[in-house]
Image (tube, rainbow, N blue to C red; front, top):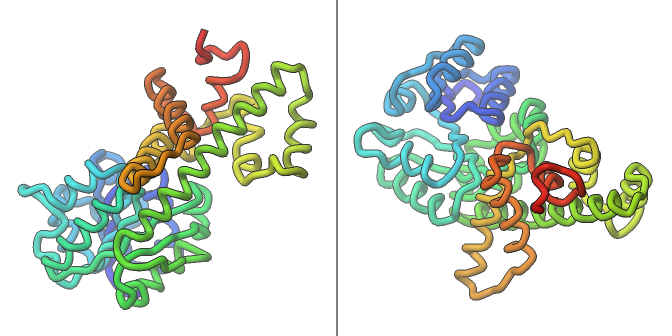
Length: 298
């Protein structure tokens, strides 16, 4: 499969670095598409690819298509727009869909690909920009097992740990849970550090103690210092946190389950969006909790 032609749709922070990683590993990058045509053209020039002006043209130029888009609405557009779609003459293509979407959207895409004679996998990503560039993403894979085995060379170039979860829709459920728990941890850490700061405690000491006790978490490692220093360079945006937690809450609603912590964390990330802070990293939630910070409610 490393001789297959690869196209990528969506080359923001994650997609662009995944494309660079595949190029570094000797894969043939043929086509780049993004709603921001200038961004697509720039990356295509860097990687020796073309930047077609239509989705159908990208499919025609590729055997394997990675999609790295923002949400269900974007996925709906690229697969189901009647005027231009990735599924035009898509027979034989393999679509690796890497966005965090609702399980229902992944199921709809899987069915549409099957009708078009193509194959789809949901390749839900954990980790962030650095891991995308280094090929150390954690990937949760859903879809037909035989297609997963076929796509392994590409998946293993992007991930040290591709994990097959089950049939279509299952990986999306798992990813929603991962991000829900991560977002709850992020909100909790911001409140803990905010209270420590208000009490006049040394935050370096607090972070060290958190790391050696039951307060430890992966989020403490990735976001704790950034919360303290107000460095919210975006690796995973508050807007994405709100969207992903919303997917988990919708799943909970379908089961009749009440998740008050998830609901509270989601409300905090939604408030960041309302305040115009949605493109800050999720660590920016600390701006809502620390005394004296401008985004904190009066």
